[in-house]
Length: 228
Image (cartoon, rainbow, N blue to C red; front, side, top):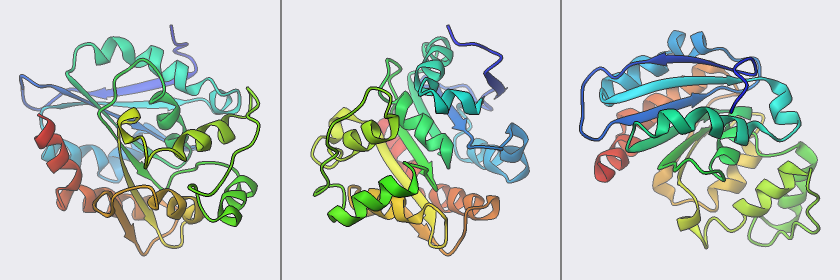
């Protein structure tokens, strides 16, 4: 069972009933709050496009990322909620993307993940993958049990060849984002139709524009409809 003191939740009920209810989970990054998703229109835009979605915002303590337990804690939190929905989607920002990808390794069936400006590893590790020529050429080497970043990237390396082992991944980032290098590496593994790149930085206005582009362009919404 998850520790409620380490993951704070805010929920919004679905606007419309549906035989195929969706659970949309927003996972914020470091120093982000649930109210930020309201302030910048994430919740309202999601409810406009997918009124049958129940929305849950899950704020995890930084310690859960540092000790690598964030995926397991989020899974424990979501198992009950996910059982009431036929489909579960995640939308994460920055460090929250790392948590979303770890959650995807667990027992909760995730249909898709929207990754906005994802943190995938420290600058040194990302540079190592770049020097190797990208994920496909990179060899992760020995994987220590507590090296959560390297272990995750080692799994992502095989996304292009084994996409069935992952939820569908969607990527959005700004060209001047501090984590743009990692996003470009990940983009090499994804279909172009699942990537949105804009002029922008690592900030809420950029992420809000990315979210709008993904929803207004129907990329994510179309995928949801096709699966529903």
